[in-house]
Length: 254
Image (cartoon, rainbow, N blue to C red; front, top):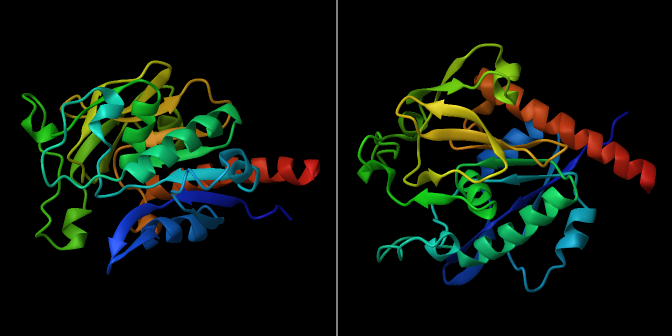
């Protein structure tokens, strides 16, 4: 029987009554357990206390989850964030180091929303801080007053690029996705291949060329009620399969 892969999920650092805490949304964990058939492991974003290579030795893949926080703009030479913007410098530091080393060690990566933006910045790209204020681009951010099922409901189509992983997984050229992001790609990083494009031209998914394993980033939220969405099921299964392959390799070397 194949070993169940262990998937690292970097946390958000939040202040909760009044202590610093490390949290991961349950929807990501559920998708990894039920669809990727994996065991998720929360990674505290305490870069100064953890040896990243030791972390990578214990896991078979990494999910970079979404978050309400934004990447600090100095990482991509952006203008200072507006007052009141939720930032998470601890996550920035941990994820940039972890994801870089994961690519170097051929550890499978699935990056979602903030994770998608982190991967673009890590590889040298830049971001729009407010997509809805950019001429020619649509409003991609959710209305937080709506019920969650509305916020995470289908919002717009994305074209799946011919020859890409997502196109091969789905077998057709367009899918509907949800849209809950204020930031988005301004300049795409070098060394990646576009996988999906929104109807306004905004890049919504890419894969990393240097990776010889699974390394995919998507701007939407496939983890939301993933079992009810064909693309989400195929995506998490493909990610889980890549992580299982690494688990088998680790088992042989042990």
